[in-house]
Length: 218
Ligand code: E4P
Image (cartoon, rainbow, N blue to C red; front, side, top):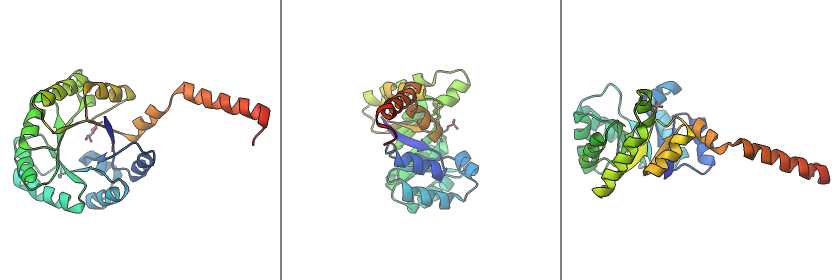
C-alpha cells in the first residue's frame, strides 16, 4: 500500500515529502478553505513539491456535470500530475466519463458503499475514495467497506485504485493495508503518530546515555 498526504498545508506536505514516504497528495474544499488560500495558487505550489498524483476537487458549489467537466479541464491543465476529484453523484459520474475519455485522471470522492465504488470504476474513475472515519462516526465499520471494494475490484479485474480516506489513526492505516487498499491518504499528524513509539524514544535515550557514559559527548 502506498501513501498520499491528505492536506493543503504546504509546510506539512514538505515535511511528509522529505520523509520519503508519500507519492501523492489529496485535498478537498474544506482543506483548501482551512488554508484560506486561492485554490489555483496552493495547488500549483503543491505540484512543485510532490512529483505524483495531486487531487484537486471541483468547487463544492458546482453540482452539474457540464460545470464539473469545465472545471475538471481547468484543474487538469494546471499540471500533468493533477487528478480531478469529483463527488459521487449522477452528474459526477457523467463528468468522470467525459474527463476519462479525454485522458484526464479522476478521483471519485465521498464514497460510502461498495455499489458506489463499482459505479465510479465503471464510469472510468482512476481512483475511488471510500471514507473510513466518517462511516465510523455514524457507528459503521469503515474497514468492512474497504475490504468489500477490494474484493469486488479483484473479482472484476478492475484497474481503478482504492484510496482509503478519512483516516483518523495509525490502526486505520494498517487495517487498510490488510484490507487491500492501494493507497491510504493520511493527515500529516497521523504520519507522525505512525513514526513514534515510546520504546523507540526510550531506546534512543538509553543508547545516548550508555554511549555518553563511556565516550562523553563526542
Ligand atoms: C479524502 O480525500 C478526504 O480529503 C479526507 O480523507 C476526508 O477526511 P475527513 O473525514 O477526516 O475530513
